[in-house]
Every structure is written in C-alpha cells, then in structure tokens.
Length: 351
Image (cartoon, rainbow, N blue to C red; front, side, top):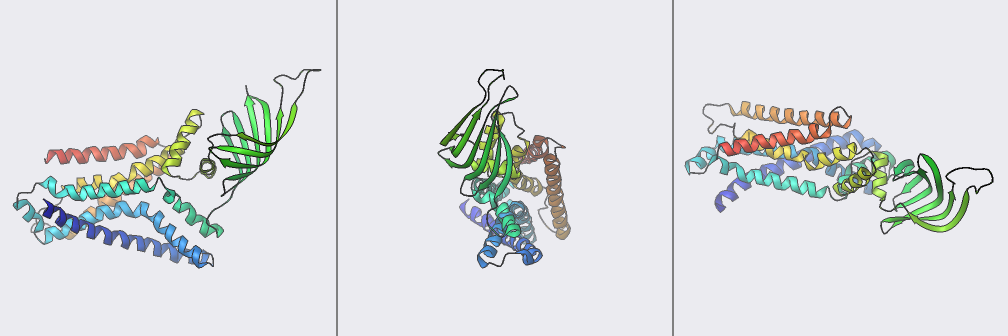
C-alpha cells in the first residue's frame, strides 16, 4: 500500500504543482501586462503588488489545478497502460482515486485555514496599491448602526483610530443623546473616546422643566465589541477573513441588521473550494480504462469543458446571490452539497 501511495501521489502532485504554478504565472503575467503602466514607481510596492496578486489568484487557480491535475494524471496512466495494470494487480477502482481525492481535500482545507489570516485581504491590498499607491486605504465618511445608536466616522486610520466620531443614541425612535469625540482609539475590545462632548436630551420637552444636559470628558469608553475590521469591512462592502466574518455575523445578527453579504463571503470561502475534489471524484468514474477504443484527446476535451461548465455555473449562481436574486444557501451551499452527495453515491456504488 505504501508503494502504491507513493506512486499515485507522485504522479498527481507533480502534475498539480506544474499546473498550479503555470496557471498562477499566466494569471499574474497577464494582469501585470494590463496594469503595468498604473503601478506606482516603487520597487517595493511593485513586488508587494505581485505577491498579493498571486495570493488573490489562488482562489481561481487552485480548484482548476486540482481537477486538471487528475485529468492529466489519468490520461498519462491510461496511455502507458498503468491504469489497467493497477486493476490487474487487484486494486479496486475506489482505491485508485482515494489518494488524489485526499490530497485535494487537504489543499482545500489549507486554503480555508489561510482565509482565517490576512491572506483573505490580499485582493484589497493589491487594489489599494494599484489605485492609491499605498498598501492601505483610509476609509472616510462612514455612517453605521450599532445597537440602538447611529455612528458617523470622519475617517478610520490603519492604526485602529477614528477621527471625528459622532454617536447618536436612539430611544423609542427619538434622539435621547449624542456624543461628539475628536478621536477614538481601539484597545482591549472597546473604544476610548477622547476629547468628548456628551449631550443628553429629556424624554419630553416641557416648559419650565430641565432641558438638555451637556458635559465634557477627557475620555470615555464605548462601542464595546465594534472592532475596526468590522467597521472597515461593512463600510467598504468587501470580503473579509473567516474570523472577521464570523464576528461580524454574530454582532449584526443580534442587532437585526441584514447579514446576507457576510453569509455570502463565508460560504464562498468555506464551501466553494470543495467543488473541485467532488467533481474530481465524479469525473474519475467516467474515464476509460484503456486507450484502444477511445480517443484520449476527445476525452480530455470533454473533461475540460465539463470542468469549466460547472465552474462557470457556480460562479454565475454566486453573482446572482450577491445581487439578491437567489438566496445564498441555494446558490452556493446547495450546489456543493449536491455535488458531494452525487460523488459519494458513485463512490459507494463502486465499493
């Protein structure tokens, strides 16, 4: 078994890494040719742009490489009569595919784990370098809702500081108080508002009664749990890391805010990569054992067309989900689960 594992793994991994780096280089090369004139005149930023470009390309290159590597491996084995020799040695059909399938699952999990890190923001860093000539972009003029408050932020700096913050507290659809701070610093899961002016309004305005109360503070704490990454991601409506998406999901679900965009980002990062190993498993059982009665070039052509068709269908469904046409569970999760169910059904059928 160990000899077979080394044999089939070496063939599959060799083809995978060749295809992966070839497609990655092609993607980066085309992008650099198209955007070379817009790159900043800085060698460091140019290298960083190329690095983040490669990271962002992995999302598209990885699943295609996993499937195409299996196709090329099977074609070479069929052409060299290695495929039929494995069956002649007594190996089952399921055993031949199990190790490439496991490798594909491992690469998918590595990709998902990477999306818990700043790797998930590679596309944003790349875009900022290209458009603004800097690694990070300052978010300005943000208006957000948190608990029963509406918050205006003049700008969010990369040092986790806010400038010119205004917090409007609402009670029974009426303004109960508002806070104005020149600066806010995030530390220990809460914001410290500095140079603060707080104004409290009475529940009812009656002639002769107390009116509003105005107080000045050097610093006060507030907005606990409202992390800078959550503010930035919601304000810019962009994909975020799985960790930040989960925190945003929990935070906004409690407040009754629409979380559809966050769910789509999570589903794309967690479920979408698995279409590759499931499709590999399905396609494997339709490959011929020997090349004598089949045109291998046509078999490869059909395999590539099927791969692009499935990938394109999932991509279109994802876009429809982002536009609110189809629920994210139906557009992203359900197709992957259907592929997985059909793949394991065929696997069980050939046990």
